[in-house]
Image (cartoon, rainbow, N blue to C red):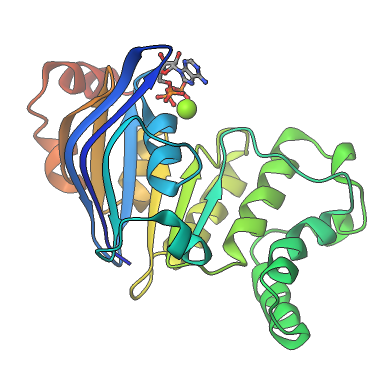
Length: 233
Ligand SMILES: Nc1ncnc2c1ncn2[C@@H]1O[C@H](COP(=O)(O)OP(=O)(O)OP(=O)(O)O)[C@@H](O)[C@H]1O
Ligand SMILES: [Mg+2]
């Protein structure tokens, strides 16, 4: 599913925190959304995924203007994911049950996605008893099993160790196969290097640079991005 964003504005308490003139997400790619703290990444993700109402503008999903029609085609992992007060396996399965998928498909998906992280021992544990990184793995799996056309991930690996981060990236790549795409918020430049096809860089609520990863990371035009890339953070 392709997404087109036009003249999008989001205000909080009368103050504009996001303004996007035009932005397009094509099918089959991983888009890395980067920028300093408070630059508007989460706001953009929430507005485009339909979680948060925007003040003005248009978001088109395959040329349809309401996210209500396409909710089933979109999944989101929030920056602070809320896990339900039940077991790990229940949390992973919940979205599939909600979408009324057959027991056979649910079992197939679980079997496939559990091969990514080594969390067999945690499956019957209550999510309240998990470490931060473990919670992030459950939240990512819970999103991945839905196999939606578009997946929004807000700093999914921020609390994961490096080994788990690399596994998560492998999983994220599979979410952008065929016509599916991923919009990934991250501060991790190495991660962008490893998984992204395109980079969108936000500053003070607007896009200051975007394009193919290889071009943006090697030949950044904007001063801020050049400074950041030089420092390596
Ligand atoms: N619910 C809210 N009410 C008021 N202001 C908000 C709200 N959510 C975000 N903001 C403001 O909007 C701006 C963009 O915030 P946003 O969360 O999108 O940043 P971000 O790029 O995701 O930052 P980070 O890297 O810290 O996650 C910030 O100035 C923030 O203070
Ligand atoms: Mg954020």
